[in-house]
Amino acid sequence: MYRVLLLANVMGCQRSEECAAGFELGDDGLCYEIAVEEPTTSPFDTATTPVEAPNLVDVMMEGWPACDSTTGNGEIDLETGCVIGICESDTYEEVVLAVGEPVDMYDYDGSVFAVWLPGVGAYFIDLDVDGQPDPDAMVYYIVVVAGVDLQTEDGLGPDVPMSCFLDAFGDPDFIGIDDLTGDWQILYADWYGPSVRAYDFLDGPFEGSDGIADWLYVAYN
Image (cartoon, rainbow, N blue to C red; front, side):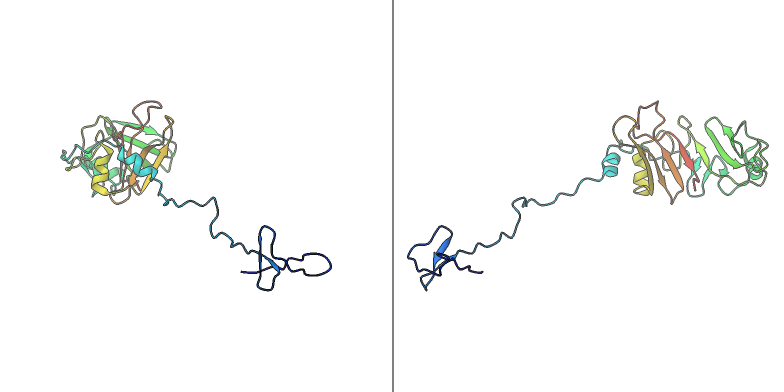
C-alpha cells in the first residue's frame, strides 16, 4: 500500500480537519490519498469449471448399431489374411493353383483386379502392363463387397454392424470422415492388427453411412 501527499495549495502544505473524497486525514493533520487495492481477477473471469468437449469420433461411433453378429462360416480369416483360399502372402500363380482361374479381370494400367466370385477379388501388380497379373505378383489386398455371404468364424464380414469390428479390435487405428449429408460421418475405418478396412458409405449417392459395413479390404497394408 502506498500513500500520496495531497498539496492543499501551491504555496505549501496546509493542515485540514476535512479531506476531499478519496482522501483521509493523517495523524499529522495532512490529507493522504486512500490506496485502492488492485483486483486480483478480471471482471470477465468466470468461476465455471472447464468442460471437456466430446470427441467427435467417439460420438460418431456411439451412433453405430449394436453388434448382432457373433458367428460366421469362417471363409474370411483375418489372422492369416485369407478369403476363400486367397491369401495375402500368395503370388498370383499360387492363387490360381489354389482356387482356379479368375472369372473376370479389370485392368488399371499397372495393376489388375482379378475376380474369383461375384463380389470377391484381389489386386495384383502388372509390371509389363499387359492386362494380366504378373505370375510372381503377390496379393496386394483382397476385396469382399456387400451381399457376399462370407464372414470370419466370429461373424465379421460385410453387412454386419461396424460396432462388431470395434468390439473385436478396439478403437480404429485410422478413420476416414466426411460430411456428405451435412453431418460428419465415418466412411471407413482401418484396424492395423488384423489388417482390415471396413467401408460404410456405399449405401447410395450422398446417403451417408448407416453403421453397417459395406465392403471389406482384407490384408490392406
